[in-house]
Image (cartoon, rainbow, N blue to C red; front, side, top):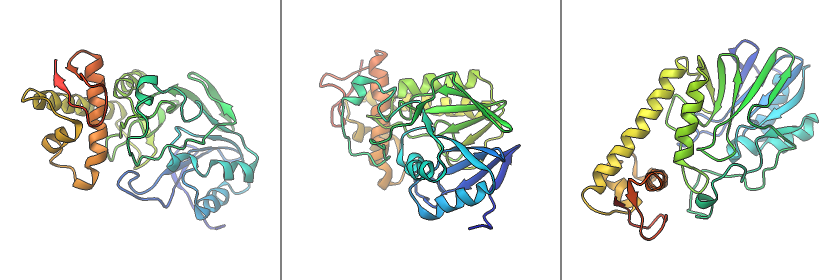
Length: 291
């Protein structure tokens, strides 16, 4: 693996794409290496021997001194323990897999999602909102952006933001209870937009060169889905799965269970804002009605 060449995606920033393509990860998880001598690795990725070897080869004579995980999904975290053991670098994150979660949504329990929460994940060190890290040629400021999952961080590096799974160019983010929280996601979109980034380096897919318009488009997309849900509920009460059949006609049937959890996230947010009601509580099989 000595001839591994990572993609240069910014000044002092290189990218390796993990070999874990899927409908949820696109071509694979992006692992970023910052610096040349004292390196920071962002999102080690899945537990894969070849990817570990590629990271170590890309580091070359540099030393990995810091490992940062944007959030506790296995496609970002699973390799972190082995990379830490190989390099001696601590793993930093906002917290464990439960950190930042909304207690009421978390209490829904396992809804059969395939998004892959790493329940065993625990960082060596906490990187709080507003916390900073610096090394040879790089500096990061943490921005807590819950929504995709409660412990999600974006990492600000000047006009560039490492946006994890909060904002990507190839697709919208999954917001899937019990780890996903739509109200928090929308608030985090606004908070990230207020930071006025020029460029996004996401957890999957290519760099986003028009960051602020992309964030606005993501917000508009969510509001359009919300409007479609309310329009469908105007015809009568429906379950999340029933709503998916009406408003996700463009989504392959294999992804409908994930879409139903996304609709549930919208419904919980709408119920909290008083736009819909859920007499039976917030459940995946519960009927929701327009308020």
